[in-house]
Amino acid sequence: MLPQFVLASASPARRKLLQMVGIEPVVCQSNFDELQVQSDDPAALVQMLAQCKAETVASQFSDALLLGCDSVLALNGKIYGKPESSADAIARWQQMRGNEGTLYTGHALIDQKQNQKIVRCGITKVYFAKISDSVIEDYVSTGEPLKCAGSFALEGKGGLFIERLEGCHSNVIGLSLPLLRQMLSELGYCVSDFWN
Image (cartoon, rainbow, N blue to C red; front, side, top):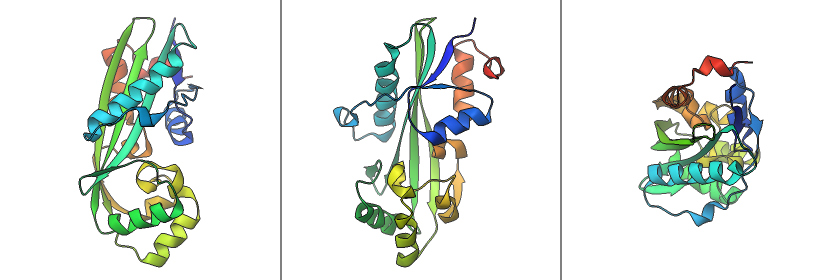
């Protein structure tokens, strides 16, 4: 029998990505305090955070397949998660416009049935449009950038301000579908097993 597929995240975007490909996850928010994990290496940081989120909810299940994810944007040598305020988001967009950043998403898959764990990182280069201060302010006033690592939602209004991507586009939304397929395969599952 297949294990229950658990998403250790409250992200509606991640849940929607899974649903789009036929996986209906049980959503269990981790509420993990991200400030407990520090690293100057964005790939290492998101992988540690993803693993901590998955491990935090693991005690609530016995035979589940738990997926934890976390994303950050690296720009000009700095790592950014969600902006703390509208002013923070505006300042960040003023740095991002006409620039390029790298979006890192950590993926941790814990298979309780097989007592196995796989942790990986998806990396996508993001090229931002050169937009005016007034457009930045209008975008931030929608509230959308305040909910997202990198201060933009590719699948929302923020998609208007992304010139191009190099790498996996779903990784920028918060979950690399090709990477998830590979991780499931490494654990001996076929992604179609989880189609409902």
